[in-house]
Image (cartoon, rainbow over all chains, first blue to last red; front, side, top):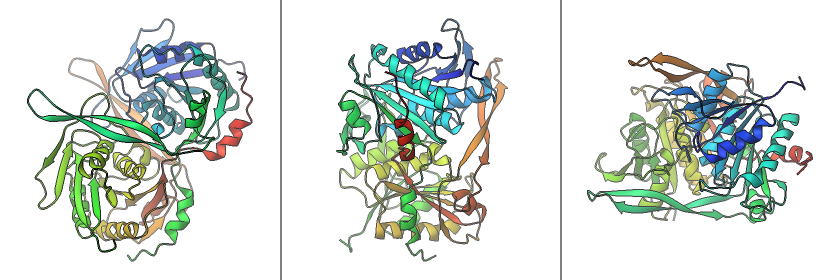
Length: 257
Length: 257
């Protein structure tokens, strides 16, 4: 088993031609056999959405030399479901990596992020899974400084596996001087939204979602702190969303029905 | 303060004309001043998606007698963001209720559900929030047997608030003999997907996502167990997705970078 080349599923949310998925795919080629399954268009902010009201297109394409590649009309989570069901056909991949996202997915962004939701879906399928994101939202983002960390983290996950029901959320600061890796918790932060109201050529209003990231967490063990201090942040994420500590509180209530 | 009528935001994912949101709105009218903000089309399975690549439409409409009502072209989470930002304008509602969903959102469905994601977004905004769902996927679903439970749970949340960072996921079994309320944890379950492949009139394949729900959890303290035994299930859900128990495991790894 140790000598068998691992099968690695590469997904993302920025779409199949994004520089970030190319960088991730090339990094993974050194660790195993790579299969790419990604959306045919950008799917940022799609969270854990799945496509149920309409059908999906799903096609094998020639895009990257020597790499089995598929594009899908659906969401990042759809891509993982299709990969498991229709490409790997029950013989699950040894690793699922998502990204590298053009933009951070730390803190509360784990909920909105298609990149992380794809990795979470991999974990639901019992595949060791990791989402990678870089603090650069442009298509010109330089992923090179991240690559040695991406390879090292993926290698460790291939070697150790991950605790049951968990998945890694890895975020990188911009630039060449990443100091190292910090294992963190999700910072308590949120977006303060603002809607930019404009008028269309017919005089009807429309709204762009914008916002400012607000960190409400002074902890030095958070992903926000690590990134602010130029470390790569690694947060173990779980998909059991039960607030176990709140169960006794609710059980103390008297329901009059 | 005690005498002030609470402001209640009602949202959903099945769309503004769904019978489920009408049932919820009518139930909430007995508890406070109701404002409805909902998608203009069905948004089932949208999870925590937000609309960032295109603008939103957002319009006040006359639909329900005496109820302030808005429709939005975006996702359930967009609706909550717009309600907080553009309707309540910083003076947050006292309660956010989502649903009643046509179909269950227990167990792993909390991640895929637009209904629950809207409630989670309410909680992120520090609004006491509840998602309600009924085990009936049809538009003819009978919500009447749920209503007394919906009112009681909402009243308790208005009275007690909720532990910080939590939101309630409430699911109802079908039919007239709901035995009571059980506070539960999220069952360890998943969907075993299958894709139904068909050919379009031009001979090109397309795929419908289908699947079978698989419960892998024998616990008698889960939402799946409660619903199977005809109880309404109440799961406290949190949006800190950190797998705190996994942090020491990851810290024991030696990263060679």
